[in-house]
Length: 205
Figure 1 (tube, rainbow, N blue to C red):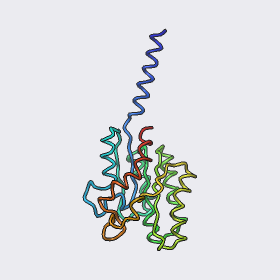
Figure 2: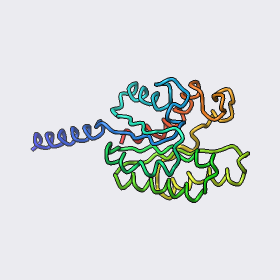
Figure 3: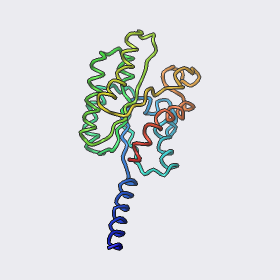
Figure 4: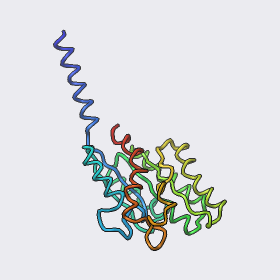
């Protein structure tokens, strides 16, 4: 009986270990901030994320489906095919900044983000929503309402949230390229620092 019990416990332990260490796929759906705009290939925060995974021996594959200039509308239209093709375990949604810079309707941005979250969850992927903010010179009321979208959706949809992708970057002009919109290579580790604490626990489950 003791030998049988030991064998059963060992089998469960092996199953649990296998489930924990199983390779995961992370889909990053973003805009130029995740697509290495103006940067040397391999120096963006998503590329640095892959190096982090290797350093910490986390078995995960990164699919960077980010496109410069992407809006939430574009992401919404592309996502179903990406979910079908890659079957991700985690979807990182980093979109909305271009909506705000173009002054698009906030309700449309929120609806697009909500639809992407729901589609990802229905595909059995966990979602990490990445919050964005814009300078108050776009209109303080608009900027505040835009920033509030992310926390509200994260709460409603029960997703993980990066409060602000450019925390510790946005207020340092020297960390931006000449257009004053896109961060430099020196800023990328700081960006990853904002994402990693939220993403890492999702890969260990």
